Image 1 (cartoon, rainbow, N blue to C red):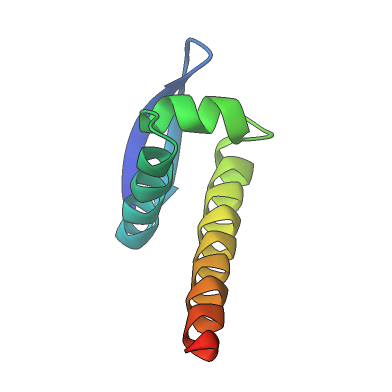
Image 2 (tube, rainbow, N blue to C red):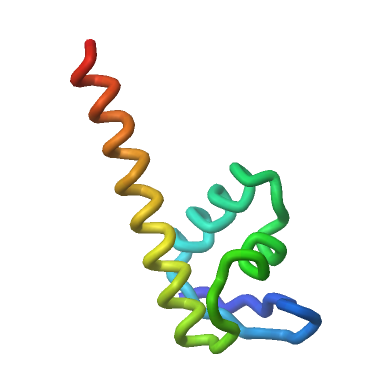
Length: 78
């Protein structure tokens, strides 16, 4: 687990995640052309550390599923 302190709405929030989720979250925020903290501020429904970590994991997994499904549809057309 890797801990990072994010500043969300001007308040520090410690977030503990496995390294892969940090990478996926950074990728997701970059796709929206936003810094990681700003992406979380705009999209996360909570600021509680445990709930925020759960949201990140769920968001990253759902994003990966969507990307795999999109690639599968492309391969099916070929």
